[in-house]
Amino acid sequence: ETGVTQSPTHLIKTRGQQVTLRCSSQSGHNTVSWYQQALGQGPQFIFQYYREEENGRGNFPPRFSGLQFPNYSSELNVNALELDDSALYLCASSLSSSGPGVSPLHFGNGTRLTVT
Amino acid sequence: ILNVEQSPQSLHVQEGDSTNFTCSFPSSNFYALHWYRWETAKSPEALFVMTLNGDEKKKGRISATLNTKEGYSYLYIKGSQPEDSATYLCAPGMNRDDKIIFGKGTRLHILP
Image 1: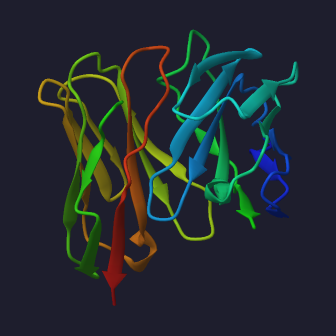
Image 2 (image 1 turned 90 degrees about the horizontal axis):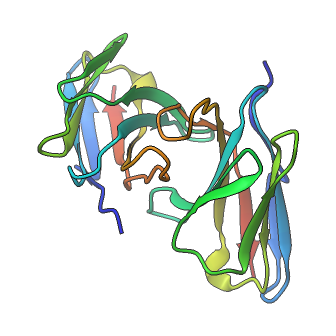
């Protein structure tokens, strides 16, 4: 069983640039959630994809966008990067046979994004 | 905005002692409550998912209880060991298709 993998592990970008983070979900999982974890905070929900459709979004601006592919892997895109976007970005997959909410999340190790 | 409170924020416990901490969440529209353990340099790991009022789950020395009517859950660790040092996150889901929202966590330090 392959776990959740995220790439890259670390990334440094300049304010105003765009970034794409990638996540391969655990084998057999159909739901992917993205979280942003800033220093001293719990993971903040960005959005969730279930069977390739966005299924809920947190309080993040439209410059945060995502995709889920037919193999259930996912991307998080952030446009016009701001200094406050510096954080650890976590991807989590789960198996939700009849809708998300109950299945435990399986997390990747995260991507550490630094915006200068 | 869903308000999830975890207390205390940080806790130092002597090895061998037992401890517990709290997660509070709005009781209306509750669907499920998740607990995760997050060790340094690792990814968060699921401990429990609970859905029913009065639910009690156990995994080794760690157990959790759930009160959905008053909106709280307790996590208990019996006989703390150094490997229990981690941040413990709770995350309620407030309806079946909604997102799971995390609290800020309780950071547990086990003192040798």
